[in-house]
Length: 156
Image (cartoon, rainbow, N blue to C red; front, side):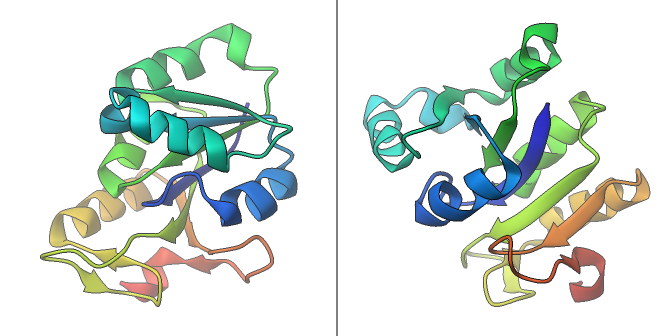
């Protein structure tokens, strides 16, 4: 069962390991990222940052969809991490169990403008966000679990 789908361009880091994992009761972190899934060095660094009491799986977007669609993953408490709105949208479109997405951090990049202190979005991101909202998916901005959740719609 997906406990949280989070967009955070750092993927696995201290905030995820020390606050989000225990807050949602996750026993398994799934990094869904095509680049990381093919990079042994990045896999190693993600493993160093994961919480000791959680399993870490690193999969491509397609393999993540297959894994999360498998009945054997249903009893697991899973925190899914992606680093882009595009990857989150791909998972949300393929997996009906995704009903909400947490926006944690997307740093400045070319063509993106800030909508909060930790999130910058491109026009393409905003188009995907509006599509997700139209499908009834809740999109919240919250860096840590103790922050007050804000609907991304109010920041666009």
